[in-house]
Structures are given as C-alpha cells and as structure tokens.
Amino acid sequence: MKRSIVAFLACALLGACATAVSDPAAITAEETMNVWPGPAPGSENWTQQEVTGSFGDGTFPNPIVRNVTQPTLTAYLPDPSRATGAAVVVAPGGGFLFLSIKSEGSDVAQWLASRGIAAFVLKYRTRETPPDQAGFMASFGALMARRPAADDGQPAASPMADIAQYGVADAVQALALVRSRAQEWGVDPQRVGIVGFSAGARVAAGALLQADPAARPNFAAPIYGGLFGEEIQIPTDLPPVFAAVSADDPIALQSTLDLVMTLREAGASPEFHMFNAGGHGYGMNQQGFSSDHWIQSFYWWLEANGLLQPVQP
Image (cartoon, rainbow, N blue to C red; front, side, top):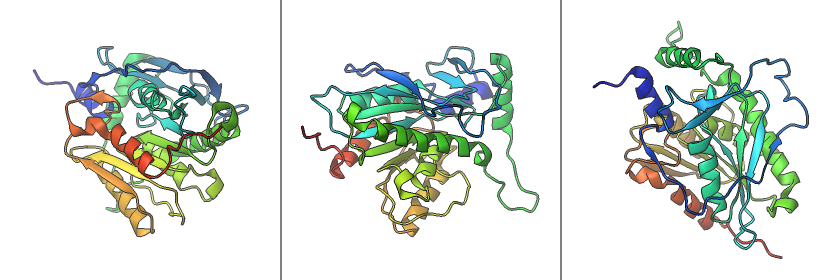
C-alpha cells in the first residue's frame, strides 16, 4: 500500500518510521523556566494558543509542540559526580511550524546528561498554525507541497527567513541564561554550546554567527540543517563547529553542505560527517544506519576538543 503524502513527509521530517530507543540512564527534567524575563520581544501581540500533541493521526511516536509564543528552557542536569562542566542548549526541529520536542529534544538532553553534560531543551517560538489537528495537518501538507520560485529565475528567499529571527533571539537569550546560572548548575560559562536539528540547526547557526562574540555559543552543532538559502555574513574567529547530515536527506543535504563550505571559505575548520543513509529528522530515533550514532560522534568530538574536562572543586 502506498503511503499518503502526509505520512511520507512525517517520516522525512520526524523520523517517524524509526523506532525510538530510551537510554537506560535517562535523567528527568530538573526545572523549566521562561527564557525571557517578560514577554518575548517582537511577539508581544501574538495570540495563538500553544498546542501539544503528536504528528498526523497519533500513530507516530514523536510528540510535538506548536504555536509557541513563550519560549522556555528545560534543564537536564548530570549527576555531580559525573559532571564535565560542559553545557548544551538543544534546539529541536520542525520547520518552525512545530518542535519535535522528544526525539530532537528531551531524548538528546537525557543522553547528554547521562554522560556528564548539562543539557537544556529550548522551546523556541514557532509560526501560528490552526489549533485543530485536521487544520494543522492540512496547512502542513499545503506548505510542504509548495515549491516557491522567484519570477526572475533566481532562487526564492528562504521560507524560514522571516520566522527564524525569533528562534535565533530565543537561542541567544537561552545561552545567556545558562551562563548566568552556571555556578548554580555546575557549568563552565566558557563551555556552553548549542546543538540544533533542521530548523533548530538554523537557530544554532544564527546563534553561532552573531556579530557580538560574547553572544555566540562556545561551540555549535547544526545537525541536518543550515541557513536554508539565506545569505549571512560570516564573522571571524568562530568557535568550534560540528555538522552532520545524511547523503539521502531530501530536505537539508544542500543546506548543510553550503554551511560547511561557507564556514571553510571564511577560515573556520568545521568537523563534518556525511552519513550514507538516514534521511531527515531522525534525531535520537534508531533506523539501523550509521547515522543512528551521530551523537556518539558528537560526544567524541567534544572530548577531542577538550570540552569535557571535569569541573575542578
């Protein structure tokens, strides 16, 4: 039986055809806090109501959150005896229409925290979508079916350009929040990074490329995603970058390659992993490909860059 277009896109965007695997050392969330001290700047007049649920008809394993107007940060802290002092803000993907809050959020954070890395899941602002599930799925299908092209024959502007600014601002503020509470959480404020997936990778890249070096993460890991057609000036003296994508990714392969090559041309030396297979949006889901182990490669890269030195008393 042929899959519906929505089911196919769900598999592509969420890794929804994969099997989720729980880490036996899973760590529960410590607390959830607002990213901003008041209403998030620029969206004070947004009126959509946040919705939590699942993708499609409820048969897919990955929970999502959408219509986010109040960004939050959820902390997953390691056992102090295992703490390395490193911290990672985790930015889930979802095309800025929703956030794949588990497979690209809490599952990632729990894996990192179980290995001594403080992790903080960022629920950043997303586009407004219809509140009911049927309306949301219809709007999602319509958006994915569109292939915009500029009238002059040049590539169309990135469909993320207008909304990405809010997620990037939320990420920069989240990094500042983690650093401000570093002592309380046993974190080295000079080892606070960000990992992002798909649209979350766009958020991570935006934070990485901030003009103010103090606002940037100390390391960044865009996973199957990049600037998605946007042209952004690359600053000098960037922190270390880890990037990964699958060769069969129908959505983010070119964007990831473009980001890596642009960083190299600007004098940076990103570590880049292109897996043979995996598609798009798998996060921590397991599909039986080598891309299942991207997070181990990320961990080894952190270790090789001296970012996992234990906190000294």
